[in-house]
Every structure is written in C-alpha cells, then in structure tokens.
Amino acid sequence: MNLRDNFSRGKSFFVEYYGLLFIFNFSGKGEEVFEKLRVFFKHFGVKQNRISARNKKVFAISVKSRTDFWKAIEKFTDCIISSFEEDFAIFHASCVCSRNFSFVFLGKSGYGKSTSAKLMCDAGFDFITEDTLFLGRCGIIPFPKPIVLKSKRTWNIFLPERVPKRPPKNIVFFFLKRKPENYLDFKMKIKSIAENLKDVKNFEELESKVSELGFIRKIPKYKGVEMSLRSIYNAKKIELSWVINKLSSACFFKI
Image 1 (tube, rainbow, N blue to C red):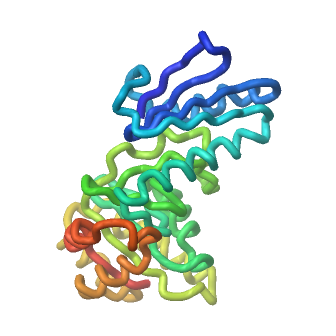
Image 2 (cartoon, rainbow, N blue to C red):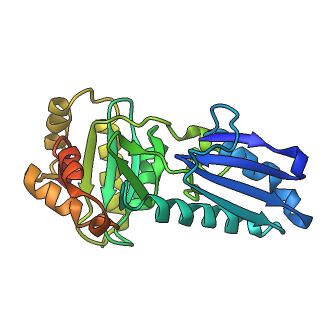
Image 3 (tube, rainbow, N blue to C red):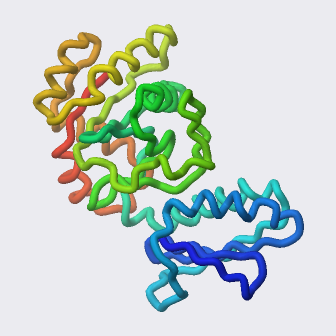
C-alpha cells in the first residue's frame, strides 16, 4: 500500500492498495480526523506514488464530520472485500502470530474468536485480525481495518504498526466447536495454549506441545481442509484448488 499527501487539492490523501486507489477528501469538521486516518494508513505506506494506469478502480471517500471517521474505514473495508472476493479466500476468523506460526481461530459468532485473539496478544503474540482473515496465494495478508480489540497491550486503531506485514506462512487452525459454557475455563485453556506454543519452532514440536495440553484434539488434514473450506465467505466466487493446496500444508486442531 502506498500513501501520498495531495495538498494541492486541500485536505486529502491517496491510498493505494493492491491496485485500488482510494481518495480521502476532508471538509468541515471532517478535517479534525485527518491526522487520525493518516496514522491508520501510515504503517502500510512504503513509498509515494502517483495515479497510474495500473489502478483497477478508483474510490472517492468523503469525510465531512468527526463521525465520518468510522464510516470512511467501513467504506474502505467494504470496497476491498467486494473488489478482492474473487482473488482471496476470506474467512470469518481471528488470527495472531508468533515468530514461526500464524494461529487462526475459527468458529461461529460468540464461540470465542475475539477472546482467543485478545488473550494470545496479552501473552505476547502479534495481532493480525479479530474478525476477517484474508488468505492469498502468498499466504495470510494483514487486512487494514479498525482494530477494536481491547487487551493489556492496548490494541486499537491507532497502533496499526503492531500488525505484522508478513505473517509466518506456517498456519495452525483451531476450531472452536461450541459457545463456552464456562468462560473462565475457556480462558484458562487459551492461556495454556499461548504459554505452550509461543516459542515453538516447527510442526513436530508444536504437535508435541499440543498433545501435552490434553484438551485439544488433532483433526486429520483432509477433514481440517474440508472444515476450513466451509468457513470461507466467498467460496463460490474463487478457484478453490489453490486454497486447498495452501490449506494442505497447515495443521488442524479442535478445542
């Protein structure tokens, strides 16, 4: 993503994301959140860039009041999802990562995906997403959207620099099978996962550590791939062969 100020047109800036160009225009009270949006996108900007023929689409987003701050992010998010739904597999999942692994939590709403991400971040893992996971041919892609997760490490929209640009390609999927009946017990299990898996270096060590925990069941790879495919928002709009190939190198467990 490239970020460029365009002061000749007043309060505005451009954001380029995978060939999409977003022009944020500020007026009135909206100018008060100009810097906040700059902070949000700054982490993803690597160099200045001009409008070019390679831009697939151009979106103009107006920010006229302070409350438009969130509306602008939501529109940005919606435009990306609709534009890339044929290129990326989009999961309803949370995700964090350590130095060597990306950990994905899948499950229905209320099953503990955000809680799992929060507790893992409290234990020192890096945050990727609490809700929308993008998987591309090159691996997991951090999606620039508001971070509303609250934890001891203060993850929020103003700290996007804490989101890794290139998450580890080794992926571990945890399926949350039901809504926690005892939330305290559920939290203790996630904390145990964080404590035991933070520094694992390879899949062999990871599986050994998981087996020691006792409350996690390993899922056969073919079954894990099948279950993961059912969690993809846009499964009917993408070529699944490359997704299956990508998932086949992952590891799957049920909590």
